[in-house]
Amino acid sequence: MKVRKAVIPAAGFGTRMLPATKAVPKEMLPVLNKPCIQYIVEEAVYSGIEEILIITGRAKKAIEDHFDRSPELELHLEQSRKSTMLTEVQAISDLVDIHYTRQKTPLGLGHAILCAKSFVGNEPFAVLLGDDIIQADEPVTRQLLSQYQDTDRALLGIQPVPTKDVSKYGIIEPVKGTAATNVPLPVHRIIEKPSEAEAPSNLAVLGRYVLPPTIFDALEDTPVGHGGELQLTDAIERLAALNLVDAYQFQGIRHDIGNLEGWLKANLAFGLEDPNLASSMRAWLADDHIRSRLASF
Ligand code: UTP
Image (cartoon, rainbow, N blue to C red):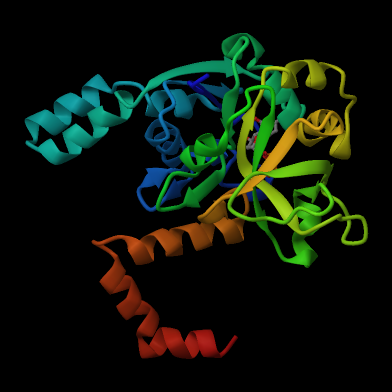
């Protein structure tokens, strides 16, 4: 069965990016001149997804406005003959069929996914976290979908992370005797934000999933977990206990724009690759004044 639908959770408070996120949704913070969530919607579209549900909440109206038509702006661009910009602005609203639902209180990622139950129905679906951009030659969701065979199983996008950072992620334990390669790896267990001592590996789930519809039953049976939130990881662990979870090591550089360091690195990384910015950015970084500032830290 083709995976046609994707869910993008974007209802969190974004407290780590305050005060920027007091009135602006974290998912709308720009990386260069594009809001984070547009990169994510584009990844889904370039991966063959036909319908998207964005989970929003109070104070997230800017997300809906961004993907909607803007007649006044379009008229202004037309009258001032800014045709390239007009085409670009119109293309955003024509990208794909986007639906929205509100998570009334942000009770955790698992709870946000549960809000997608009626949209998803009885099909497998992709999940792309609203604050994780992945720079990749082949869109990461497409990489996962090309490996997804069995519609009863979950497939998690993973990459190794430094051991000191395991407590920031869901960490998998592969089935004994298997190693991360370019094929899906059966998962024995998954733990949300383990300590270094508890972590069964350094393979972290990084913001991309393909999930079977049975995840909703698992979520409904899962108690509140780490941080007092309903954790998606805990529901996936229930599927892992039934040998129904695989993990795939995707190719790409993942940026978590939900923290200042990740957001800044994303801007630098995209800036250094942007044809209009790359040479001036490189020249700026090589400037004597900047180099001596960097050397002084
Ligand atoms: P995060 O845990 O990174 O988001 O969730 P957060 O809760 O906004 O972060 P902080 O700790 O307050 O800074 C990853 C993604 O899941 C969404 C977020 O919007 C983000 O895109 N999310 C998280 C929800 O949609 N609902 C939730 O209850 C929690």
